[in-house]
Amino acid sequence: MSDAATSTFVYVTYIRTSAEKLWAALTQPEFTRQYWFGMHMASRWQAGAEWKLCFADGRVADIGEVLEIDPPRRLVLRWQNEFRPEVKAEGPAHCVFDLEPSGDVVKLTITHSSGTPNSKLISAVSGGWPKVLSNLKSLLETGTPFATEKF
Amino acid sequence: MFKALADASRRSLLDRLHRRNGQTLNELCTGLDMTRQAVTKHLAILEHANLIAVQRQGREKLHFINPVPINDIAERWIGKFQRSHLRALSALKKSLEEDDHE
Image (cartoon, rainbow over all chains, first blue to last red; front, side, top):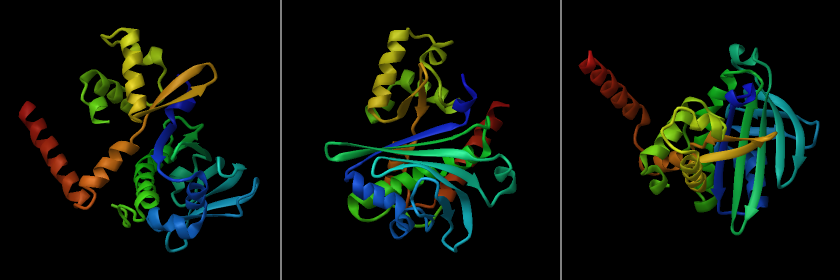
């Protein structure tokens, strides 16, 4: 087993929508806030551009860089925690978004991995991603997210 | 998804991935009382139900547990109830049942 595997989580969801709509939902703050418990990503969305994930009140949760961008198919981010010192000390992780349309659904795969074995960042995000993705699916398919407040 | 979860062998494969994510077929077969063919078949059913995701890393195929569909179900039926209350109840059940075994 490689060390990378110990600090990798993979999330897959199938959403009845188009790749373009899903891409917009991932990258446009006014859309993101609706399913990401008020949080949003901010970036100029170009390779090499700065990337931030912000809380509803504007505080920065995570920072990084757009490493690879191919709308509406693939987005690779360098992801570094900013607000928890012990997680920040661990260094950056990678987060890959892959969008694969097939018929009337799009398969969204999110792979979040860190070079650090038993990464605290990866285990911290592992509780969050399923909730965010369930909400995103519900929003795109029905027009309303399941939940607007974090449990 | 429920059909995929209805089988004890498949649930035990998910338990193994839950303990350690990102295992190869060989790793998953180790210590199991199942043939390699049976494990392969169960993994295909789990993948079809989107309960696991398979990723290629070099020459190896790694298997990852995918919690998103189970979370969708949780949001559908229990999301609107107080999750903290449910957590407190399961913690209580767990601690009481552990006491019984002592």
